[in-house]
Image (cartoon, rainbow, N blue to C red):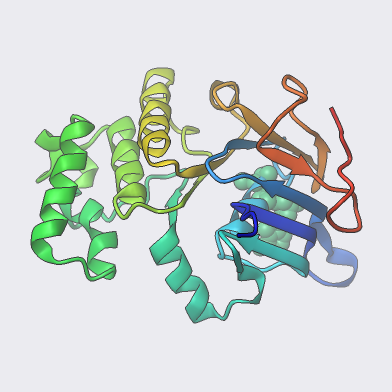
Length: 252
Ligand code: ADP
Ligand code: MG
């Protein structure tokens, strides 16, 4: 069987706007990421991190180039195919917890399983198990607004992972949290993804976050500028030369 990358980008560009107002949010991105990798996408504000995650998450399409995720060329997906792909294979955590305030914590975490038509009894068991593991079971019938920021974000992680996605995408997941809460959220992400071999891509400019990740993609002004300077022999992320795969840049 052919080797399947978690993520493959070939000559990817994303341009916003038209004419003089054009912004190149991502330019000439060519890389591969191995299954099970834990990657922090780092770089200053405006460097293209969110754009990168949105392309990987089938929330956006490149202006040119090819994005392949879990063996699917998602840059060619219809809106409908993209949404099914997100629902089944991906989990998302955003800067704000994005929980639905009018339903309970339990119902929030259960929602992805409802959308996937998992039978009610199985849904209940899975949500209960996960909430107990996260020591959040006492919060199950609470409504999100009464939770602390850290608790909300851990519930958001539970919701992102309850359906066993293959890939977890997190965009600045700790930026609104104090250090202790941030640590708890990162710990939760790490534990839940490691045991299931879920690939994790986290965009962040928070040093508390990126020092915990073993692989890094550093963006500046829409380009990959540097490849994990602290561990040159990164087995999980490979950068490729501008015109396609084959000749790795070997940047260290
Ligand atoms: P980061 O997440 O690293 O802060 P972004 O990916 O959000 O960076 O943005 C990269 C660049 O693309 C910025 O210059 C930003 O202003 C621009 N950009 C992002 N999204 C849009 C959009 N929908 N319309 C126009 N410009 C955008
Ligand atoms: Mg961003």
